[in-house]
Every structure is written in structure tokens, then in C-alpha cells.
Image (cartoon, rainbow, N blue to C red):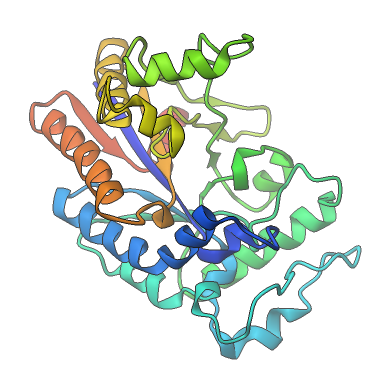
Length: 308
């Protein structure tokens, strides 16, 4: 039986807090954050697909909690809350959106995406800072009756796995395995050929338990990892390159009895074309599940099955 996982980097504007002058396409994504989140909840309900929502911990709070967490700091004194935003900007708060996920028809999983979308591989992210980030996430989630088990690293930069284990996390999304064109001088051309012409399927993964007892559930495909100029130039060859990649990956998962793990951000749904792409991929999953070829699971469910 093949398995599919959908993990979502739910961060609103926190994903851009270290971009003081974001380019136009990033500003567009920031503006679409709330609308994309709500649209995605509806799409997952429509196809009855569970997902792991890896949510930035700061979104659990509203404006009345600002002072409480403004000085939340690591033991070494490093601030956890960079506070780069206007106080009245709702792109930095998401309690109502989290309620939408919890009230959905589908039983989603809520996981962690750090407290402030912090790069865990940065030289300034010491073990003390990682502790502070995770402690804050666990605290705000438990206040809402949520136990977080799954973790997604901002920008997929994996570090401080020992700290994850200390705070009770059971799994994380690992980096996508290397493809045939990685490391070659013509990597961009190879990626274009693979996506536009469908010359190869994305990797199917097999979760494993690391030295800290955490289950590594590697990514297979970023649904919005082939954008702008690359997508425009691919249209004469394939109008839906990512949907083709998703189909090939799902078929490969059936052949190899593996896990096909797709991921993206709710704020990637900036318009009808992007919404249509996600709908098409969800429809593929739904059709394969109806045929009995596929099970769609959350990261937490995959971790439990792997350990068992």
C-alpha cells in the first residue's frame, strides 16, 4: 500500500520576517496568506484529506498577548520575538485561522514550525535559543489543548534534533533526497527537463528512526518549487508540470510501497491558477485512494506506523 503525506508550512508573514525589503512576488504571497489558508482548509474538506499543519507558534497569540511574549528569551538572553511588524497587522496573528483548522471536517494534525520561523542552522541559533523557541511553541499549544508531535524546520534546514526529542516531538520533515540532476553543472536544465518533460519521477521515501528516536519523514515534492520563469517556459511542453510530477510520484509510491510526501505553504495559493494546481493534486490523491491504491496520512500517523 502506498502512502501520501501533505505537510503545510503555515506561517503567514513570519516566513518573511528576515526579509526587510521583500520582492514583489513575496509581497503578493504575504497578502494572500489569510485567504490562502482558508481556501486550503476548504479544499482539504472537499477531498476529505488530512494534513499536517506545521504552524509558527507566534500565530497562536493575539494582540493582547504581545507584551507577555515580547521578551520571551533564551537562557542566554537571545530574543525569541524579533517584532519586525506593525502592531495592527493581522498577518502576524492567526488564532482564528488555527480555529478553522481545528473545526474542519477532516481530522488534521497541528505541528510546529518554530515559534518565530527561526533558521535553526544559523550561527546565532544556539542550543539555548532552540530550547526557548520550542518551549514557547509547546506552551502556547498546550494552552489550547494541543500536543505537538510533528516538526517542520523553516526552509528545511535541519539542526538541533536532540532538542526536538527533549520537548517530546516524535518526527520531523527531512530534506528531499537528491535527484539525478543535483550536483551537475547543468542542474537547472536537468530540473527543467525532469519537470517540464516528465523525464523522471520525484523521490519516494521510506521514513527512518534517527539516533534521537525521531522519525525522519523526508519530503518528496514541493508543489510550488517550479515557479515564475521556469513555469512560463515549460508551458509549450507541459502546462501542468507540477501536477505531472505529483502523478508520477504517486504512481512510483504504489510501485515501491513507499511514502510520497508533498509540501507547500498556504500563502502559495495567490490566485486561481495556484488553487487549481492544488485541487488537481488533491483530486489525484482522492482517485487513487478510492481505487484502494493509496492511504493519506499525517506525519504523526506515519511516525507511529514507522516506530510500530
